[in-house]
Amino acid sequence: MDGLITLSPQQFTRFAAFIYERTGIRTADGKVMLLSNRIRRRLRACGIDSFDTYYELLQADRTGAELEAFVDVITTNETHFFRTPAHFDWVAGPFLDELIAAAAAHRRGRTLRIWSAACSSGEEAYSLAICLTEQAGRLAGWRLSVLGTDLCGEALAAARVGAYGPRAIEAVSPERLARHFAADPAAGTWKIRPPAARLCEFRRHNLLDPMPEPPFSLILVRNVLIYFDRDSKRAALANLVAALEPGGYLLVGTTDGASEHLSGLDRCSTFTYRKP
Ligand SMILES: C[S@@+](CC[C@H](N)C(=O)[O-])C[C@H]1O[C@@H](n2cnc3c(N)ncnc32)[C@H](O)[C@@H]1O
Image (cartoon, rainbow, N blue to C red):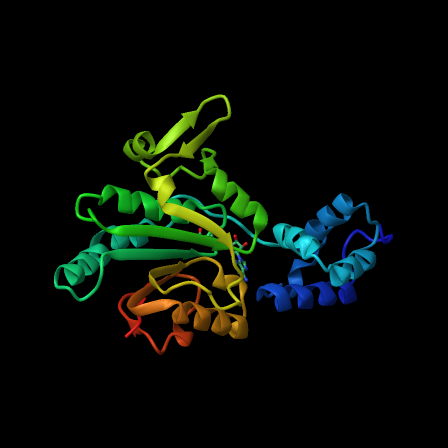
């Protein structure tokens, strides 16, 4: 394989530039070994023995199929249910309080559309759906939906199946596990059940592209912008803000470093921003 174990500096630069252009992800210089290992998975799958030949194949890919498979190996999909519990407490509490009060005062309709942007394998979207389901009493008559999107096809496929191993559900209480999941002891998985499961839909979407959907009341973008640089962060956040309805909220991950690009929104807390 190229007579080399890792990418040469030139090959690394070329792949890193390609990844940045297509995804916004900035590959740090020290990540040569990590990137080499990840790309080698595609070399093996394609029966190719050189990084350069694989790069040419990627460039010549007209169907987008290899690009999709490449994205599957280069993205970091780490996630779990109720990651950063305070975010979900805010959604189920103050956020819904305000929304329901506004609807009662006829300042908005009874539709709530939430977007879990860069949702990975769906845990974030389903955690939101669980929160909404548990508030069913005060959301009676509302049209509710949670859209989960990601660039990684493999993660989206897992999200659609909705069956999770013990690590993903570590932060799910026994009561919630019993109420919202069906255990499959043979497989060692817990599968999300209706009604929470039914609220969610998953679709492929690149954060660098505008969202071609009606506006959302709430968008979560967490633990993805940390992989971006200033320019790609700015571009992604502009698309996200454009997809928010007036008065809608953007919830950002605490380490995502988004604040400098959100001057057009009102900062409500360390993790919530409201579109005027
Ligand atoms: C670490 S996961 C975060 C998942 C979840 N939001 C959370 O906080 O647990 C980051 C996800 O961002 C996705 N991603 C990276 N670049 C993207 C892009 N340009 N557009 C959409 N998704 C992207 C990856 O595929 C990955 O699934």
